Length: 240
Image (cartoon, rainbow, N blue to C red):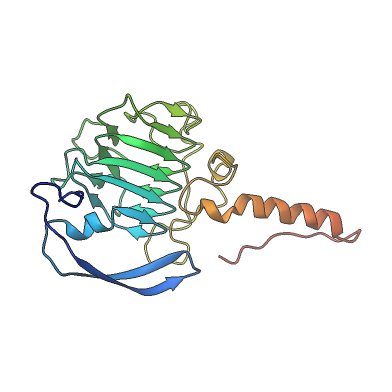
């Protein structure tokens, strides 16, 4: 299934009812979907514009496109397929990501822009292809993001890692990658500054970019030094 314009020849209506079950911190929502019609991959197509969401692996027709912002796409392991065509092997449609965390391999026909994102991907056993692969690499841009060094993508701009020598040092570290845990996909403090402050506005890469944790920590330390009485020491204790 792909999204078509009204009136396109051969297009059929697809109707889905939805309801927000629960929200968290005005950032996340648990959504209940009820398909009225039974088109193939109807729910995936209707949710193709992903914003402040947590979703599983995506199977997208090559003629469709997906835009995701401030979201997590989780295939449950770095060597599982997170984004591809419905056959889970061929390239999926055009993909654009802004401040997203993706866990799993990607196969896309092309990209618009991938920015401020973390792509945690490893090759599958027996598959010689890179874990992140785009077919058309003459257009699009990958910027201020983390992705495997051998990825086949359009031109990279200020991405990590920059070389094989530094690949281990800048690998993102997470408090937890288990869905349902409060610290799910939260970057650990042990993560290198190249990731924690590596976005285009010096915030962290990934789904929690908009929280600006590195800047908030730095600002608090500045204020503590300014106003703390002589002879006293202060530290920051992280609750979560």
